[in-house]
Length: 315
Image 1: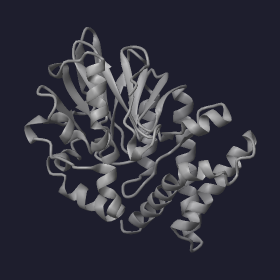
Image 2: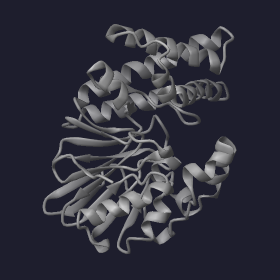
Image 3: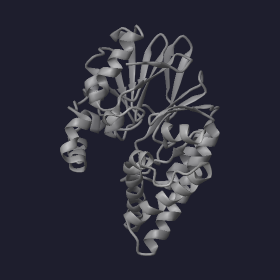
Image 4: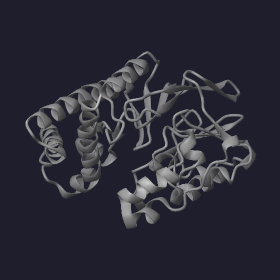
């Protein structure tokens, strides 16, 4: 299992989510204290523990386990990981903390969604002891020592309980899902980073996303450390692309639903946009590797867009 050095004492670990490479990155940041951003699901925890050993980090040096939000592909392994590190605290948005302390609702919802696949994908999900959970405020600083200070920002849009960390040393944002997903397979195929927003049910909020993009644009940023997946330079362009596509996604959903369509119609429209965009780089339409890569994400994005407008009707 390889640990990739990204410079500035940042290390990337591929936790092989869903048994596949290049799906989920977790990051280790080293200074006098160590921090982990994202745990991934429980089956990948062994990779993180092994990575810390390979880097020579004793268990007592890990101070912070930071999760962008409580979705199980980001935080499902938090309860298992913290058992290995006696001095660590789990940092989570205030809205999400209770679900780490008592993950029963998360487990039940995920079992309904994933059915028999749940145990393979997520394994055992353990509660995090309440006294080891910290809920950082907007703009809170995390001092790792030796001059390395991270800052927490609350970044709704993907979910109300989403947060990121900003690292001035690397001019980097550890973005969770707020700047979408980066697809290395597609990026290699077209010769440039390929990023799409992530807009699943049930908290996708275009207006909140716009506020998040404004907040991030005020930072001195160059690098984005995607949970899905990897480091990409050119943060301003990534923010701009997300802003444009979130608007397009919302307008597409509005139009489709007003015309009597549903989730499947929105999904077909998202695929049509994707094929149209990729056509300028070559003949990709209906390529199986791309369909396999994006099928789940496209369905979730379409469902989140439709769910947003359903919620708006009830207001």
